[in-house]
Length: 183
Image (cartoon, rainbow, N blue to C red; front, top):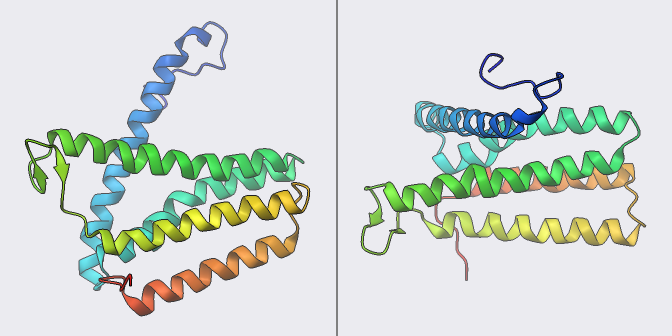
């Protein structure tokens, strides 16, 4: 990466920012693919479903860089940047890390895709629907909490977020998330 991503911070390389962006997105996609393949291989070896591997281990693995970056800027007194990094990183992961490859697979994949309509039918929607709804609800609740406290975060907010995440993990592991009942 050192040799393929131009350092736009050095004088004379400022105009190469498009190349830096493209290569950064390329490496993000490449390493996401490697991580996904590793998760799909390791999960069955230890007896954990693909869904649990993705929701717990892959999600945590992709969030650690955001956590450390947010901690650095928060310690510099830039709390807004820390929150923006956390929310923006997750939005990017969802739309680009999941959505873009899924879109490409719908157009160019052969397995689980109905070719005339480019419709993907290999995902058990019942297994992913509830966590997506929980995620959307938590984002809305987080924004409402921020608005109610004048956009100030307190340690109690962090403790409640950790508690909610632990409850979610307990729920994922106890239900196995294979075929939840939605009604």
